[in-house]
Structure formats: C-alpha cells, structure tokens
Length: 183
Image (tube, rainbow, N blue to C red; front, side, top):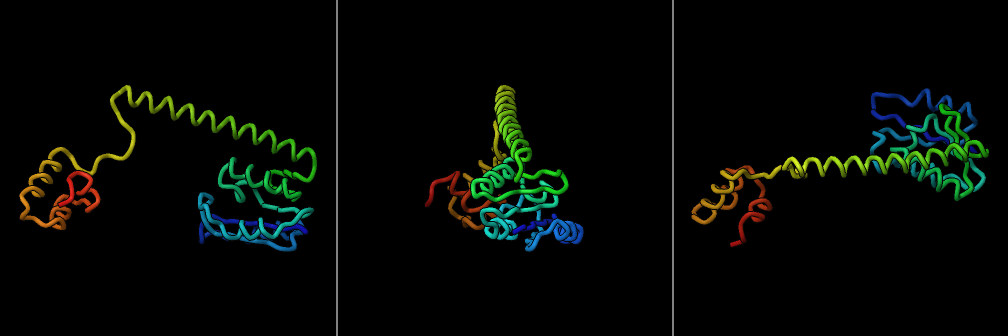
C-alpha cells in the first residue's frame, strides 16, 4: 500500500496541491497536519507512521513537510527502513525503496552528524568567549541590586504582605522565596 502524508504550516495555507500530487502518486490513504514543523506532536504524521506496514511506502510532497529537522527526518526514515517500509519524497525525487535512495540517506545521515558536531563546537566556543568577556549565560536575574535591597527591607520589616511585596517588585512568590528564607 502507498500511504501519503501532507502538512502545511498555518491555517491560512491549503493542502490542495500536496493532496493532488499525492493522489497522482497512487496514495490510497493520506494523512494530514496543519501546524509548524517545529511542533513535536503531529497527530497526522504519527497516524501515517502507524498505518504503514512492511512492504508499504510512505510518500511525502517534500522532505521539509515530513521532518522537523534533518536529524528528525533521518531518524524517522531509519525507523521506516528497519520496518521494511519505503520512503519517497516527490519534490526531491528520493526513493528509499531503491539502492540509490538508501545511499543518499546514508550521506544525509553523515551530513546531519557533521552538522550537529559543528553546532556543538560553535556553541562551546561561543560560551567560552562570552565567559572570557565576563558574560554568563542564562536568563537575566529578575531582581536588580536595588530591587533585592527593597525586598530584604520589606520582608524583614514584616508589615508588608508577601503578595504586596511581589506586586511591588513585579515578581512571583517563587522568586521571592528564592531570595529570602520562608517565614
């Protein structure tokens, strides 16, 4: 059986073109999603992956419609291959049911690993350079030195409620208790 999968990024876009092309490619069943490629939970893709069996082929309009990233794409196609399920991308003309398509995906896998290593190296170098300039990573503190002084004054005075202190400093109770011990 040939199973199709189509996705558009927003509700403003339509699936019409992808659906026509997938039907022309012989897809008997087509699953769809509408949402960003970065959304982890794509129900239609999960249903398409669950629907295919050994000997079937999963067909997509384009690689970027199927995978969130190159790594995600390679992981899913590797799982399909392990289940003896073929994968076709119509736009890129990749077909893993043949040896040429399998070879291309092995190259993509090596490139993805290389890209991950480069990103990791650049991030490490960037963090080291930032630390050398006296900059730490992470989110900025919610309280400045002046705000911390005001917090300590209001808290130790005891006449101001916790809610009023939080409202005055525009912080949450969790943040307040991070800076001062509980009463």
